[in-house]
Length: 171
Image 1: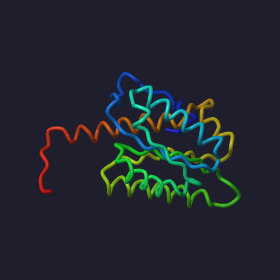
Image 2: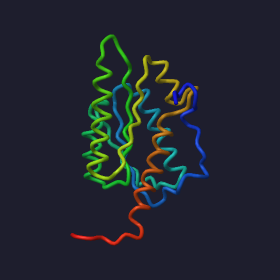
Image 3: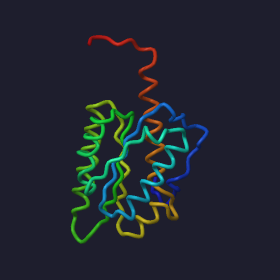
Image 4: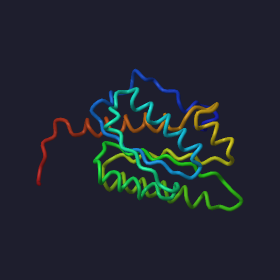
């Protein structure tokens, strides 16, 4: 559903599991910092609002969105989080660079998720112009950082549910 039809910050808080026992990583692109830092604020505040302890939220900044998958892998290796949230903003310009960057980031995060069994959340805005980005970074359509945090909590809870009741085999 297009974000113009749904506020990115709207969700049923009562249906969200507690994040009190969870560890999160947040990787933030510095490119378009006025937008990505607003995404970060919404993301961080949502995690804390749902019980995540500040000391269990690890943040890394990378130069741009293209570097999000590499930063996410580094952060995951250092802190072993339940989920890693990647926040960026790639605004369409005069060329198709945005398509290449967005596809590379999406593929990189998907590959990390599949290979590791850990959620790497795509919290990257892909707007046509700066106003669309601002509208989705705390503006009229909410904050994609909030949506990314909610997704991370839900995916971390799913991963934890899968561990319960199973006895390890092998190593």
